[in-house]
Image (cartoon, rainbow, N blue to C red; front, side, top):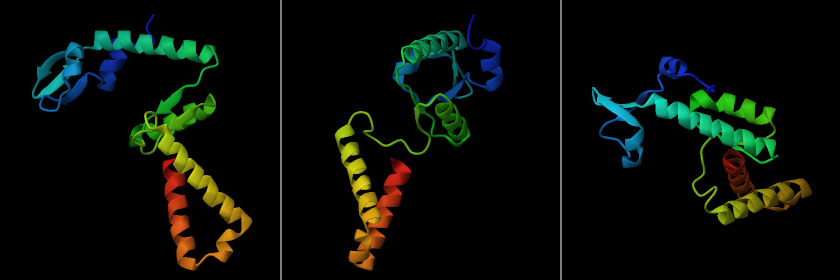
Length: 148
């Protein structure tokens, strides 16, 4: 039995794709037809792929693996956060940082910078710095906390 039915997908409007002028050729096999300048997605293939994804994630979770929840659109942010916290997994529900997976060395250096700023604040090193420098560090800290 499928995790989700074709009727549910149809009611949710999942079958509506992008405009025909904004397409990716890799999606050709999943496009059912084109109507009024919009691609209609093949829901039979969608159901199969959802089942495959569900089984894969279930197997990873059963093996105590880690799953990264990603949903940066306004409609998904709250539910992504709730479900990820519920199963104690990591999530990204704000802006996706380019290179988060492929350039992790740079991301790690930014995390180290954030930790150093936090350490400086705890140790009272901010009191020894000029006010302008403290404001600059606070700005960097806020930006890093929001994006990391």
